Length: 478
Image (cartoon, rainbow, N blue to C red; front, side, top):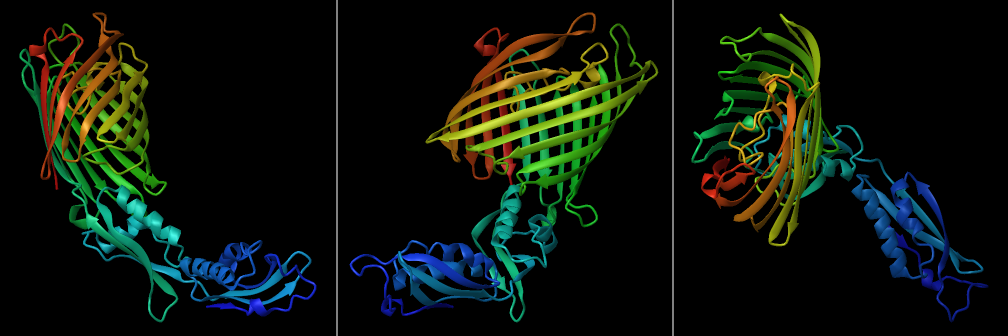
């Protein structure tokens, strides 16, 4: 409710001259639980003594209280008295009790279950209904990559109660995918991988990811399962397993991770316990050496500006991880630290886009004990693109990505340059740095729900362009 006194007819004996604008010199307010209205009311100071101006400020005060969930709000200018430099306006403002949150409800078409919606949104049931909570809940929901908002959110009072529902309108995004990639040159056998991810299974925010690859290190397979909540707490549980096997090494490893989202879903923190069994063929031997058993812990942090997109054009993402392990075998025991990091920046420049990124991985100490059984490969269409899938295999590597392109969500062309360094094994089993680069060009096509990438790349030791690496990746989002 808003009320304005008949201020135009106030007796201002001894007040300001009648040929000048009379301004409100001060505001004397009576507050009854009306904290949210103090700001707009105080802004009356210095304004002309005008009914419309006063009413506008009082309406702002009432609206600010209602927007914060107060059941009732009123503000009235009840009197004014003359001062030496203008007038003092007397205001009476009051509010009733405040609405409290009841639940978060989707009025759109997403398949998120009510429990998943509530756990992701984290609307604080029983706490004052602050619109900022609703905006934070929407950000957390969208950062999962499962859904997008299809209409503005709203707060609705539950009839005959002091409780409020947070109403959001969401639609599902194609967050699951099937992916296959292959690469080949005139001088190498084809190499590739196949991946599948099922996201938000049955609307429960559970994910399953698995894949298999055939590359330079032989055959590799992995699987990951995400349980979004543990015992009703907003803590996820992730189970991971990986198997890699070839003629030189054999690896079986797994991890159990607990994770939390921070900053409304824009950052992520994970703590894991890991274990592995590794064996490899020593130079000159014909049988695998002793099996090494390792146990360790891993800490990983990541953040990004926007949800993961099939067409990143304006984004910032960073991830860091450190793992400390103890390794035991028949030949003794040792400790090792593994480090991994990456950053990716995409910027839209009208019809063009630019990307600057970097990836790195290393182990410490990097000596003869760092064998091929823990060497990983960053190469292929999703990584260091001058190398085939599954190479270059090394325990330590880093590379920089500089890329530019033209196009949008329907497709485009791009070119890239990727200088880098990796650890290369000497004859005495120690490691030395080997510098290199890759460069190339590609075409990205969008065909309904498919994105297809065709990349032609060469590296510093490619003898001729007819020996360049051809790579194809197809990803279906559903």
